[in-house]
Image (cartoon, rainbow, N blue to C red):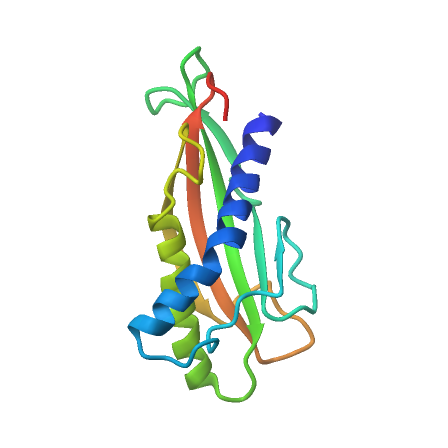
Length: 168
């Protein structure tokens, strides 16, 4: 079980750290934005560490409420040719200053880039994995506060699954 969880989070982390800058640049170009206006995170952390005072910051980790499951024909019983599912979160955090409206627009553009990372890399670089976006939040995120009232972000929920009987 730990191997599947680690592999899923590691591949999600590698995909975002390797592809987000390209997708941010594409969003800037598509929307006639200033180059570099959508900042690449200064750190990509494969853990839930919302108290880090790095900005911008990307956190990639398993969902603490429902991180892992085995499924077989949708009934949750363990058999030989099963699938594992990992529910993960990808969070982009930044201090936005007092221009909340401008920050909200930029965060929506950043969400677009994050969606494109998954859409363009559904298997996260491993043929036996698949991923899909389950939802997202944009704005001042609950549980990600630091000492700044201007910290805002994007929280994306991603499901990753693969065959438990194959190398991942």
